[in-house]
Image (cartoon, rainbow, N blue to C red; front, side, top):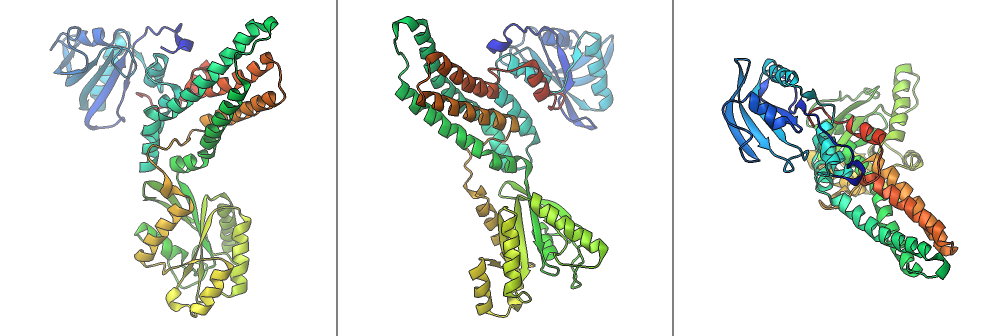
Length: 462
């Protein structure tokens, strides 16, 4: 059990449906707590559950007051070899919501409380089965919608992130204890903590923490997907490109300029990353009020995008217009790639070379899937998503990000203190600040309000 929570003894037993509500082949009901096995045994006459081994499954009926509720499979997990660290029963019953509600109602009659959101995982944390980063990774794993998000959550749930922080913290704790020891011998003017070694350690920790902070922008993309705006003048081929990417006729394609007046969006997965492509109204000055609103919305979408695909018609664009468009893109300060569409109709190689001198573009035919496959690879390269390794530690949680930034600030204070040769007591305070911020991430230092906020976001039953 975590030292912080050692005095918080949990005595009640909780229950919840662990599978999504609704009719299905089976449903799984989870019961955890001191009385989980004993109470289940009262309504499971098929076997004496108090005598069976842990991690075993048993077929039988649930019966209460002479009424058979269902034929079920009961899985027994005895503490501490369980997810929560408590006795756990998992009941696999038929997926009728009437049966599920009936079983839960019986346990309620026997004194079992309905679980709050995330309470099973919270108990796992309280009982030292998971640290806080691993507990949060459980929620991320459930919510993962692509390969990269899944791999990042798995890495964190298996302790990759926590282990990295733990090693850094242990080294810093050692120096903090040496400085505290110096304070105990203050009158004798002894130095147990080598300041040069401490300075080197702080630089090492700063480098690692800063790298984690920098990974958050990538982590946010992995977790939430990449809003990618397809922009350009009317009839550049934006809607055709969207339809080719999605492999369906999502957007109306027409030779008439201004067909797309609002925006159309949909998601596709490229190499495990979700891209949310947004087809926008063509950028041009117009007297049509509806089209003008669409153009304004296009600018707003571009400013909020993580990536912009800018298309121009190579057969109908002059150098001056192209220069203006490139300068506009650069002003947004957002990664972008430029596609020159209709290269089969373009004026010729010389003009394309002139465009490339202003800013390189990728020549495509928007309706050709071969060109689009090359575009997909290009998008991954632009965001460097092709360089992600499975064992990379990537920060995806905004709470971790804030604590890491605070850690960097505290480490800067330590570096400044060492530079100015401040007294040991002041140096110790700065080191403690850094340790506290690192401890907040893994849950070694936390509050009831923080835990309530974290676990309230979990689904019930997890």
